[in-house]
Length: 267
Length: 343
Ligand code: SF4
Ligand code: SF4
Ligand code: SF4
Ligand code: SF4
Image (cartoon, rainbow over all chains, first blue to last red; front, side, top):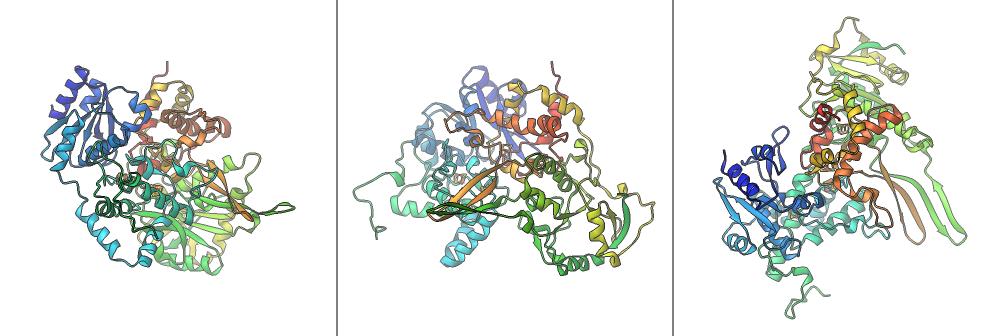
């Protein structure tokens, strides 16, 4: 029996949690989320190199919340999502039991926010090197080239909103895109509608994106839209000295005012 | 009409596309775009990805696009003036290299859009499309066409069907009058085929995994089985991916886009997976939670459509499962429903 199965069995038995969100084998070579409540389900838990999905979006899903006290299997991005959700008052300290999967397969448990914060301070939270390369490429482009690059990508978008649904930070019950009286964002998946949606979403995730990549992984049309929000990470850091998902009581850079904030963007 | 069998050489395929183009037909076919495969207008054979199992989205967009203008209007002092889009303006189009499940998917759409009041936007476009499907030499584990009455060589919905029978030759089945009319325009490329060609030898082997009548019966009886729908859909995140790639999903929304002088009315794809889909103006939502939306998706295809339109609303193409970001596998879920003991 794996350590994970042992641990989750114990957590369920002593009622520390009512349900545990982990991974099971999925179709083809995929893995998928499982919501473990029973002995049978516990046996299905797996943990391997393909278990990369950030499961924290489920912490915001109504029917999952109703399962009772939740435990979750987390990777670095998931820990950061939890911090970010905490800073946005979506999760309370101690509300979720967190098991972190270390690279060597061992497990670290986190029962409070403080310990997650401490852990993250010495953890690599950066974006992957291939993504870094893509961003460098994008930044080396002229404004016009970049414009063409994104327009070509957005052409494929069908507005299925899988990106939004998969993102742990897109938890609003009523997204701006869903408001159609008036239409803040054109609802249609045409050129302007796609562009507006992605720009709006990127702006709303500026300083909140924890670079988990779920949005791009979720996209059935293979649009690398995570690069949009990743590109905003360094400007936010440089301008406000803020990084998303590192502290449970962080103030959100784009909704906080400080007297010494730079005002050089005001024309 | 009685089906006719002909032989076409692979080496003549590019001539075939040229012929279509020179007659002025737009040709829509699968085209590779990085990891996705789109059904798009092509100019020549080399653009077409004939070796892919399935395009990412279905072929439905040929007759039911994601965004479609249905009306233009101007706002004038004297009132609103309307300029409806005339469906008669749509062009005769050829859908080339789609799969049998795409072609048969149009049967469901025909049933839905053909109900009164008839949907001219869809019916005109569909009526002006000639469908040349390619049977499937391979399938993958998401495919389950044979469990819902289709198959890798199913000809329902196709006007012509092509099957590769050797490295050089394609068996051409002429299936409808529309197909016959089109085939007449490339008769010089066709030779007669012997009657004894066993097409099934060239098709993928897709195992039947459930009994569709049983699934229909059990789905119909399971409306109130809250636990079933909840367990199946706990991981569903309520996006529109499954519905948008599906060849038979037909739900749509209307949106007006206007300024102070004029506007357009657009028809857009919609999905029962979205919470917004059933949200009332009052704020009340009759499908409050995702499990109810998942139930709707399955019930619509396997209970309501069989009951009201006498077709199962699923072709077993597996696109929804491939596209689902959280690996909701419909074949698995339907199999589980089929195996359920209903008390
Ligand atoms: S998941 Fe992809 S196709 Fe769907 S809305 Fe997002 S970017 Fe568009
Ligand atoms: S925007 Fe994308 S990468 Fe950022 S938190 Fe959301 S899903 Fe993750
Ligand atoms: S429901 Fe899924 S498998 Fe059935 S036709 Fe639609 S996309 Fe294909
Ligand atoms: S089944 Fe998958 S694709 Fe469909 S709504 Fe749920 S998460 Fe989205």
